[in-house]
Image 1 (tube, rainbow, N blue to C red):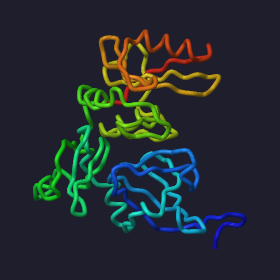
Image 2: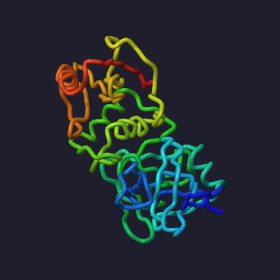
Image 3: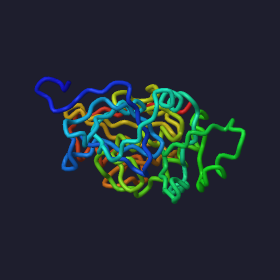
Length: 265
């Protein structure tokens, strides 16, 4: 039965996996709604509800702790056992700007952050087995500082897009979370990663947060070393630390807090 005074039907023990390059997740069950987030190939989700016309499903992405609505045409159902295995076992995460995989008899292009559910312990060459071209890394292996910066720099010039999680458009928070996720570090939507450190102790790969206490808005940057940071304006860019701070102070209130966090272990 649907919820009282609601047009959605709750569902239990239904799970799915993204089997397209980018899967848009909307705030409401309509394409006219705002984009909440995007899922990339291989990312899994729980299915929580379906609308009365069975044309939209409300989902929850456990890795990011975010949810929203996807079109019924995009639902690719998997078993509960597969869902748990995909979440809890190691997998390969795409690092090259553009990769490709032979899927359903054709080439499907994959973006950084896409997941291939094979571990480094496979007894066969999984790249040849699935016809994959591109580069990947084991998600279980945490990136060091140099590797994390290399991942981050692949997004230079990616334009701003609310809810975006790809080189073709990045939401600021979701984009920085994706960079660290590719590096093997978790960043949930309601919890900043790592631990706070003194600002002058920051090392390359650490995260800077510029918090506007008046608007409760956060702006992010990754410290690259040599007083340079990678940050989002209308696009991802690299500039001097002083330029980033000056830009934010000129565009936000005076009630600001600058925080540094170390994420790399």
